[in-house]
Length: 489
Image (cartoon, rainbow, N blue to C red; front, side, top):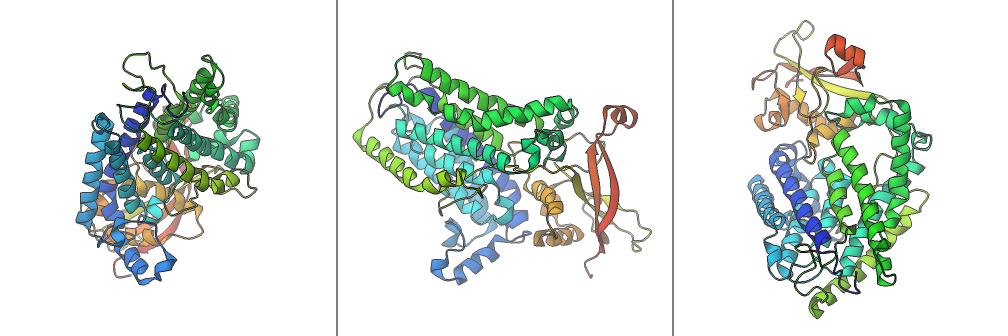
């Protein structure tokens, strides 16, 4: 690191720009496939209804965040066009093509992704109410100012990425320490692999590991999130301390972050949260410009005055916006996944301050029989959430199955959400776009006469139960949560 130009962080810029662009591609593809049945003109929570309410409100109230659809009428076709445009731009940036030109070319590309995706998440309501939506937006905004290959990345922007990783990791660590007792007595991971929102193919094996291993997991998590984030800033010492030590410490800290996130990738399905953290941790990896192919560029030590001025302004903006997030990190009532401004920059992050000890699943069933008391009830199968006890969970991350995630939250609430009632109606109508969100429609597109919701307690099968019955899950404590309902009732 050399003053205003981070001359040894050309490789870090490659990781950041290409990785963030790839995540945007996944996010736009996820939206293209799921937004219309969930939030479209005939969705479970129609976005046009939200927009109509926003337009009828007082202008100063600003009930929703910035979105293109505030000025341009929403239609499903326009949403699809925005997604395809986002996929195209993110694909070019992931391939590194705009980065071959002057710095304003990738800047415009990333700003287009940032505002385009904000236009979607701003009207996404509960289906887009996840911390990794804000994380992707903030990462895309910062990536816009990394420059292109004809010059080194600006030091201020690289440091802002470290600050983002710090808030992400340290914020999550503090949430856990302040949260449930299970994090303080190191028992959280005894339950988490089994009760997490969407287990992966290796989650059961992780759950069945010895109790001492789970305590080591929790202790390692505390180290990775409460100690290591401070070491990400070690390369700054290179401005005053000669030698490779600062760079090595920063790279080692990034390595710890990457290793812990890869374990979470292997044992769960947290959309692009873990992959985004891995990409962002790459910002602390420096490679000397003398190494061919990964240096800072042809003018390795210089930044144009105009670009230096622009990035300095971005740094000053972030310094002003970051104060609420910094204060929140040390607040007694720390906020988790909170934005302090309309543009969702310099946010507060965190996850799983408490861990549930039992897994409750809502299973939706339907029947074609007229007499529901003696009917043959068949289960609707979701793509990601547990259902069939013999089915091994699949790996979907970084792709985000939004309906499945919201189904996990239902048992945690005091009442069923409004969208779920509409979902049951869509099943009774055999609505094709809604059925496409599922893994299996037991009626092959035909309309059922009745649907109902049954609650079960799920747990992973032991090794002996797996050998005897071939089951991955064991479920019990069955009760009918929503009695049979039909279209006329």
